Amino acid sequence: MALEWKPDPRLAWRQVSRDLVPAVLNADGGRLVPWGLHTEARYLREALTIDPRRQALSEGLLPNGIEVGRHVPLSSLVFHAANFPSYIGAPLESDGSVWAGRATFGWNDWTVDMDQSPDDSRLRQELRVGYGHALTHVGRLRRQDGSTFSVGRGLRCTEALHSFLGFVRGGWCGPALLSGLDGDDRVVWQQWSVRLVSPAQPRPSIFMASDPELLARLAPGFMARLNGPAWGETYRRAVALFVAANRGVPIEIGIILAQSALELLAWSTFVRSGRMTPAAFKDWSAADQIRSLLDRAHISRSVPPSLVALASLSGASAPGDGPERVAYVRNRIVHPPRNTSLRKLSSPELVDAWRLMLYYAELILLKLARYKGQIHSRIDDHPTLVPWR
Image (tube, rainbow, N blue to C red; front, side, top):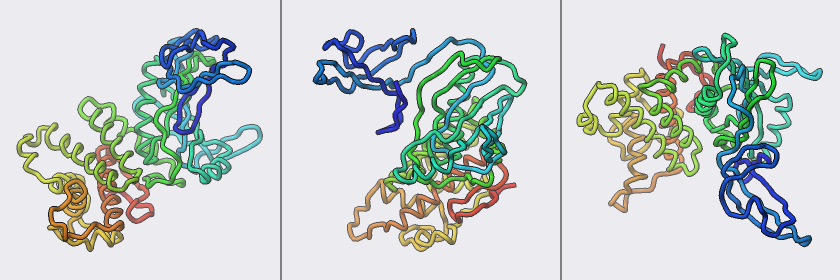
């Protein structure tokens, strides 16, 4: 068994048998009992070939991964992150090498030390060639008071880390290959699997290499929203829509997904909270929903000057108003005009609308997390403070 990166990250298996009808994997799907592990996992077979020596070669994947070991109290849980951005962190030392690779953050009674690979420069060079995948960071999750925790609690934390790290990067990055350790740092449980990971293409992101402390500033509020009873599932879904939209290929899908995230956030902000009735909310246009979200978060409605194509867009009914313009672009994509003489939207107009809509979604998610401080602006491409105090 091995972690394979192509065509997508997955846990793969291969069996070679002298029996032309292998006794273990003789079907395209079922339950696999790996050799010597005394456990089982669901498998899918993708290929079966017979080589010249009349050996049967079976290959496939374990779609849900596999667990190894016992569910006993853990003192820490080690995870790996793939394709997470580089940063200048606290100093680390190993085998005579020193590098600035540690970022520490926490929430409630949990703390995480996330360490960048000492081979980060080499990994980044290789990733730039094919924009594939690499394990760039390793993290350790602990309770702040040093107490033990169950495997289930640790798994729930890694699920939350999947959303948190994905939002910060603007693309999915794990966690993968989990190892649970006891009080003597012995591995007592493992989960061999990898969550959704986005390829290493550069993506717009709030994160800056010079400011890994953003993780510590954001984690408490983000995790409180994500794990809270009122917002938890809505916030997680909005983050997932944001990350999917941030891929931007094709750009039209990115715009549609970004508006879906904003509509979901508006519904929870104004209807689920009891501030207004569903009937009243349905009377709002998409632009009204976005505008109301921005006003509540003290975010400017105007189109940023750097988005020249969107600022000069003709056809929008509210010149100078960002929500009206991005909603207009989205409606042109989803509801093609009956008037065939209406010109097609240009690529710069689509890109500007995508950038502004994701900027809105990004800021609303940060506002809900009660974040304060600086971020990297996808609009102006430089550090900027969030617009609320």
